Amino acid sequence: MELRHLRYFVAVAEEQNFSRAAERLHISQPPLSRQIQQLEQDLGVLLFERGSRLLRLTEAGRFFYGHALQFLAQSVELKSMTQRVGQLERSLSIGFVASTLYGILPRLIRRFRTQYPEVAMSLQEMTTMEQIQALKEGRIDVGFGRIRYEDANVRRVILRDETLMAALAADHPLAQATELTLRSLQAETLIVYPQTPRPSFADQVLATFRDRALEPRKIMEVRELQVALGLVAAGEGITLVPHCLHSLQRQDVIYKALNEQYLVSPIIMSTRLLDESEDIKTLLQMIYSQYEEENIDYIKPAPHQ
Image 1 (cartoon, helix red, strand yellow):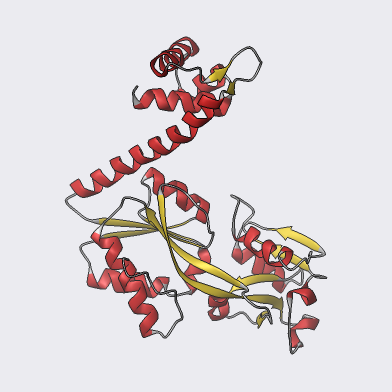
Image 2 (cartoon, helix red, strand yellow):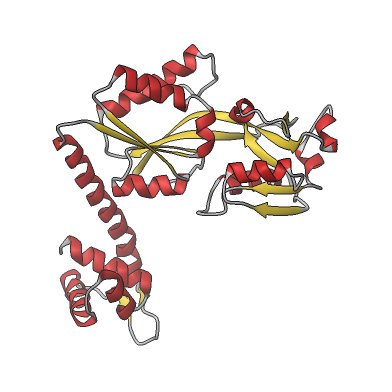
């Protein structure tokens, strides 16, 4: 059994059709069918139920599919890390969600570059889900996101829980309220972001209402944070944002604290599970030092970290 057999099997399992899988793999259908038959012979079990229009996995096929995905991801991870070890010049590619730019991330990057100028750093804005995929494909080495998403090939470190605030137009009637709660906001149009991919920060915000048995009058999904704030300024609705956005001053938008318990969004650092790079360890320790120096509450690491 070879890696290509696993790739072929995964393609057929996901497409549920040999023709579409062959197109996806850029090969013709007959050799693909033969490779799947050979794989079944090697394993001594049937992986697909044949006879219907859509190919369906057998129980053994479903078991094999889950482990094949994990094995393929680990092979990509191994390739990426081996390439990094073999590089003469060190590099560190970082993915981040837009809201983290308003926290310590810019100061952290400047500090790291100053202390380690020999490391070529690059930054890419991407959602948490995009970061997970990019990590497994070796396109980034570190991700800073907000979604608690489990993946067997990704290590997550929750750095801190950041309080959520309401962003309202400066002339909104609630802007002068002495106390603001989610219940007092549910009659408003709730603007959430990003639209895709999901799950995302949008789902995190919606869950804060549903966990309290509340339902916003209307929900508007937009592409990104800046669009949401622009619509808030135009009086189209309200949105929830992490506390770090307090530093993003706008004359037409105000940020109000909410009188709610445990209304937070985590900041999570993600890396490949097996990546033991010294640069990544240094970056993490630098984050903790930055939090200490700036007197920012954070989740202290377990003794083994």
